[in-house]
Length: 343
Image (cartoon, rainbow, N blue to C red; front, top):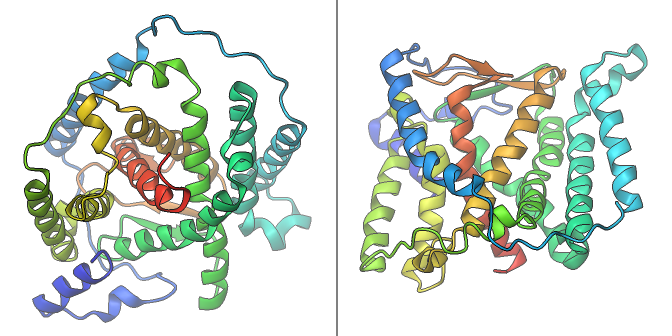
């Protein structure tokens, strides 16, 4: 559905399909609407109204929070931190001797980040995702590559980001991009495990706003139809529906789970347990900050073109664009649990 519906919509409209399948995707054929103060204010108000209750709940001091026992930082975490600093320097510098590898700094940066995140989790809790479930953890890497390629595919219909700074042929592009994309899910999930060691996440969101949806299967059916229609219309109205790139895949996956009688990422909300939802969204936002920061001065990088809100950049990303990381993080959690198992 995620792959087929956007193509189906373009095909039924009678538009040519060939521009959407150029590879590597270099051509720009979607011309976006200019900045609009009304749209910016409306988007900002919508985001604030959604985020404010969670922010207020998160900053509350948890009751009877036992201090986490201090453990030494593991040696492999120290080695990973050194690798991260070296990769960061190489990514932002332009040493002549490093020129043949200058476009390939993304993957070592994020492999180091993943190790550091696991080391921080181990220091706080004595366990971490990488050591507790090594086989499933390493399966996250190929799953992550396929996962992010699907977003690259959806981006062809809205063209909100483009890559610059490196010129590769199709096979080189596929190989190097796949290596980079394979780090997305491990990074977000490792960050989520670290966040769950903090009492403000673990306690404040265990009993928070119970949410019961009557007739869940009927609701899932209607939401599935709406999300499907949105994806089918993605290429026809990219300026108005681009946010569905981040929302529709999540809705489709969760609705299919609900229709099959499985528990979903939203099931714990019936008892007010928002821990996984909040930690997944916040983990992607944290990773998003580092993605954008390290991207900013790298040679091979991406730039954005977001309709109506293309202003007030934090690094390359317009500030309101960071809100897209929140539903993206939940989607990362849903897909990762298919690999890791529900925990």
